[in-house]
Length: 290
Ligand SMILES: [Zn+2]
View 1 (tube, rainbow, N blue to C red):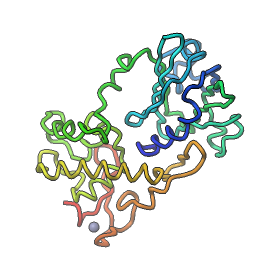
View 2: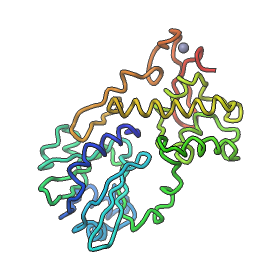
View 3: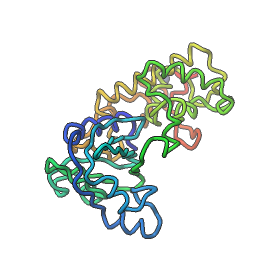
């Protein structure tokens, strides 16, 4: 699953080619068209396909940003604004090409679902092998309430205090700390891989109850989450799944992982343990993490 660092790289990869460009035409794959007819809402959510085209075609992409694991496109046409909110799901990705046949990875070439034809002659293509991704066209963020619940970006100055305040929330009282930091209402965009790695660096067992952590541990854990996400971005993300960057290249963060899908601990040589916590597989060192 693309995590925050991978999504950041997708955004950086396409940004120079899309900002300031007009979207001349939107083309959907037969899977998207068929899915819509059968009310499966394939990729394009909450809107008929022709309405989506009406509110996208002829609009200029003013800006693009990443928020948590979403990529957001700000559109403008004659003073009217729209927002495209996209999530890459399990295995989605955007590509910038002259033609969809130029997508460098076969699987992504075969599984394109939405093509945005841009005024610079490029195509912005959304491909998704498993079709769990989504693209919404909304008039404002208020039209997609779950988006508004996302915590501040982990690199924002208010993110730490926001996270610390969540420990007082009843919802998280007797939850495992791993479950709490995966919640995007607590920390924005901390997915499973990075949560496992941050807990290892902090020496905290993923199943510990949130209330059991003292102030220093809580704060330290947040700083490690931020650190592993920063390293993930620096290393171009992980390429454990079949994810590829917009240019078809892969990241190298998997070479820097200490516990996620590792066999032995690099610090103490213990066998790495796994345990399902809140439906997600946690990888941890039973000796180093208490
Ligand atoms: Zn260890």
